[in-house]
Structure formats: C-alpha cells, structure tokens
Image (cartoon, rainbow, N blue to C red; front, side, top):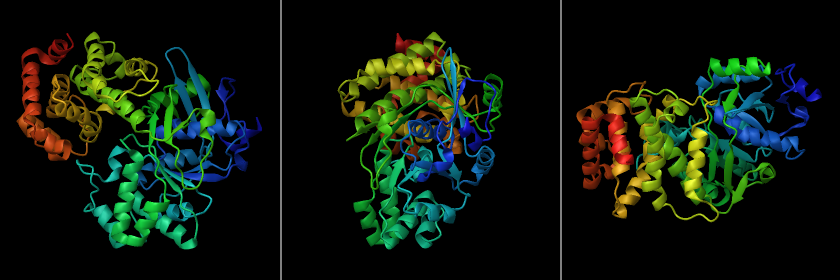
Length: 478
C-alpha cells in the first residue's frame, strides 16, 4: 500500500493492480519521445511489470515531446505523478493496472530534451512519433528539402525536429566521451529502426560528416515489431475507469489485453531484461514485422473504407456484418498469405484468424475513423507492397484493386471527416476518377502508372457503380 503514496491515483476497490515497488527509488534509463496512448499501454506497461518483479529499476521512463499540442497530456499526467491507469478490456472482463514506470515528463522544449538525453544515465531513446513523422517521401527517401530538416541543417545546435535533437545530443555525448544511446523506434512502420537510422545519418551528414560516420558505426537502431490495439481516450473511457474501478484519471488508456513486442537484440549501451515479461528478442525482426504489417495492419486498412461507406462507426459492429467479415477473411487469404515468406512455427492463416477475433472485441469500441486516418501514409506501407509483389509475380490483384477503389470512393465523398495530410489532393483527384487518383505520385509513386493496376482498379470501380459497395465485395468474396 505504501507504493500508492507515489501517485495521486487511488481507489477503494480491490480489483486494481498498483505498483508494488518503490517508485521513488527508480532511476531513469529511457527517454521516450511521444507519450501517447500506445506507448503507455505497451512499452510503459511492459516496464511496469518488469519493475514489479524487482528487476530493471534503473530503466524507468522519462516522457518527452516536441509537440505543444501534448501540453494538456503532460499537465494531466503531472497531476497523477506521471502514472496512468491502463485497462485491458476483453469481451467478458476488464483488468485495471496503474502503471508507474514513467517518473518524469520533460518540459516541451528541444533544449531540455537534448540536455536529458545527453546524460550518460540515459541509455535508450525510444520513439512513437507516428508513421508519418519520419520525413520520407513515397519512395522512402529522406526529404532533406523539408523546411524543418533544412532548419536543422542551418542551426544544428538549435534543432526543431526529433532527429535534429537526437543528433545534437549524440554530438554532445561524443564530445564528452560518453557511449551513445540506442535509438529504439516503436512506430508501426516497416524496418522502423533502419528508417530511423537513415533519417538520422542523412541529416547528420548534412551537418557534420565525421559525426555522421560516428553515428553510423556506434549507434544502434534495432528494428522492432509492436502490437496492441489502443483506441483514443474520450470521456467514455474516463467515465468507465471512474465507474468501474473508482479511479479519477484524466488520461487513462483502454486497450485490448493482447500485447506483442519483438525487438532485434542490438543495443549500444545495454537494455532492460524485458524477455522476463514476454518481449521476444531476435536477430532479425523483418519476417515477424512483415507478417503483422501485411496481415493485421493491412486488414485494418482494408476494412475501414468499406465499413465507412456502408455506414459503420465501430470496428466490432462492422465485423458483425457478414459481407465485411468475409471480405476481411478472404482478401488476405487469397492475395497476401501466398506472397509471405514462411516463418518457422507460424501459421499465417491462424495468425489472421487471431487478428480478426481481436478486431471483433466489442469492449474496445475501436472506431472506423481511427483506422481511416492517414490513408496516404498507411496504404503505401500496408497495402501497396503486396500489390507490387503480386504484379511482379504475375498474379491477380482483383481484391486489392477493389480495396483501392473503395479508398478512392471514400476520399471522393467521405462519410466521416477525411483526416489526412494529403486530404485536399486526395479529395480532388478521387473526384476526377481512377486515373487521376493513381496519378498521385506522393502515394503511388510509379506503381500508379502500371497498366495492370489501372485496368484492375477501373474494373473494380465499374463494379461498385453497378453493384454498390456491398454487391462489389460480395462478388469478390463469392
């Protein structure tokens, strides 16, 4: 019970797990940039369980952000001694845990962040800055002409981007003879560690060739695969935590009970023993990652636009529709799984079934709107790689052409707000037709000019015209 004194979160009920370790004795080993719901339900949760076992108490988290929009979250967590109530919701049960692995949250200021991660005690800097936060164009090249990166080249000691901050802190550590930290991306994009390294070294090379070479040689950027469905927090989730568990939490997280984290075991300056609490460390994460991106994430991306066009607001409700349930099962079985490299001990069809069962969890109330966000960033990562593979192999793309045609219809007259960095371009081009939509090179690059894709998508679009959304999907799945 004494541990509760380290957090303002409390309850008179007995069905909440509180930290059983002395939070005042924790010391920071990780600075995490981007303290959103996913981080607190995933990485912070794993570390909390590790600390509960009496291990890794020098690996506590210091939160940080460069986004002033995160100020309200920081203020809310400050009033709770940086703790978060994480509720795992299954169909028939709910388990609440007050997670205490974060012990501070820096002021939203680049210089404060640089100072902290330049400290020798910080051995990992982890990131959840969203898939779109890596300054990559549609080919995967670093957009060094982006105004923010150009600013970091001109004034490297006063950076404005996450990557400029990392470089400046590494510069200070190198000058002081301090071992570099590991950069650990927890974002949901292919080869997230390789991407982080590519952005950091490209920007560093523009600033200081010698520093870039040192980073290339000495800094670890392990790839990782992360998974836990974590919706946004609304008043509904805050009310649930209050009524069901008696906790007044300004920023709780409600998520599914499933968690997975696979990390390449390559670190610059040590790591916590997270394997004790279920994290998998491997030599190469790429096959695990591709499985998740092309089955779980691609399934979300395949479902959301069809579901929105059919009037659904929640994922579990959409999957109660037999047409959409069959669509989500048949498309990956026919067109994705045959293109995946076999993974020892893994049955892709069973993994897909598990994903769909997770999506059906009614307690999560995951929204179609959340899945439909940032299609211009997610479709190239989750859908188009399989399209390319099938075209290279001379295979049919009937299902994925229909998926892309449904996305185009959604963009042309979105039944929910079109939340996308390219919203204006998507809306205009989609209203002009398939060819104009495929001409958006920021999304499709040269793939949009492939005659087989254009033909297949035009056919799919005509089917939607003739049969409607439901009819076109039924024609495919049957």
